[in-house]
Length: 321
Ligand code: UDP
Ligand code: MG
Image 1 (cartoon, rainbow, N blue to C red):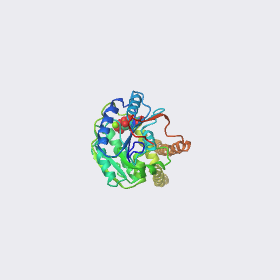
Image 2 (image 1 turned 135 degrees about the horizontal axis):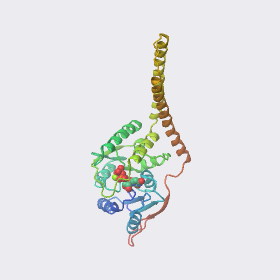
Image 3 (image 1 turned 30 degrees about the vertical axis):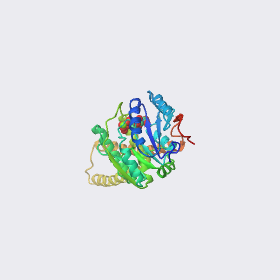
Image 4 (image 1 turned 90 degrees about the vertical axis):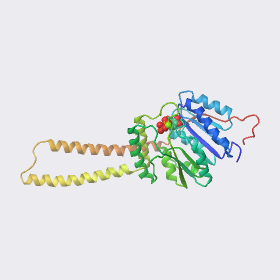
C-alpha cells in the first residue's frame, strides 16, 4: 500500500489548546514515519480549541498530503476526539498519541515493529508516571485497581498511547456505548496484545487539561460504565447492615427485658446518622447508574464535526483515489 488515501499507518492526535506542541510533534512524527516504508496519514482532531491550534492544523493540512484536520464544534473531551480519529482513520493500523509530547514519538518505531511481528494491540505502558502529585498518583492507583478488576487487564501504568490493528478498530466501532473509555474498551475487545514501556516526558508546553474535579468525575464515569461492582457493594452493605441490626435488636431486647436498657438518645441519634448515611450513599450509587442509563438512551452523537479538511495534494504527487 503506497498512496496516502489508503495508508498503512494512521496516527490519531486528540488536541485541545496545544498551539505550542503541534509543530514539534509534527516534526517528530514525520522524522520517524518518513524513514519507514509504510505510507501514513495523520489525523489531527481539534477538540474545540480556543487558542491558535485550529489555524495551525489547517495550515499543516494545506501543506501536507498526509494530514487530515478535523474540527469539533466545541470541546467534547479527549475520549470523543479519540473516537472521531478511530472513525475517520483509513490505516491498516492506527496509533493514538497525545499532542503534548508526553508520549515519546520514538516508541512508534518499536510499536510498528511489534505490529509487523503479528500483534494486534501494542500498549505503550508508563515505566514511571512523570511529574505527578501524590494525590494524582493515589487517585490513578485506586482507579486503575478498580478498572483492572472490571476488565481483567492490568491497568497500572496504562495509557491511551496505543497501536491497534484494523481488526481491533472494527471491533471497537461495534461497541455502541456513548460513554467511551478507550483504554478499557481496547482491553475488553481482546486480540493478540503486547506492550512496550516508556518514560512519561514532561509536557512540552502548556498545562494538563484535567482539573482535580474533572479527574474524579472521569474516574467515576468510567467505573460506572465498566463495572457493576458498586451496585453489588450496595447489596452487600445492605445485607451486613441488616445482620448487624438483627444482632443489635436482640441485644437491645435482652437488655430491656432484663431491666438494663440504655437510657438517653445518644445511641439512637448515632444509629440514625449511620443508617441515613448508608442509605443516602447507596441511593447515590444507584442514581449514578440511572444517570448513565438516561445518558445512554438519549443516544446523542459523541461529538459534532464542524469542519474537516484532508491534506491537499502537492502538484506532482500521485492521485489519491
Ligand atoms: N485533550 C483533548 N480534549 C480535552 C482534553 C485534552 O483532546 O478536553 C487532549 C490534549 O490536547 C492532549 C491529550 O488529550 O493531546 C492529553 O491531555 P492532557 O495532556 O491534558 O492530559 P494528561 O497527560 O495530563 O493526562
Ligand atoms: Mg499530557
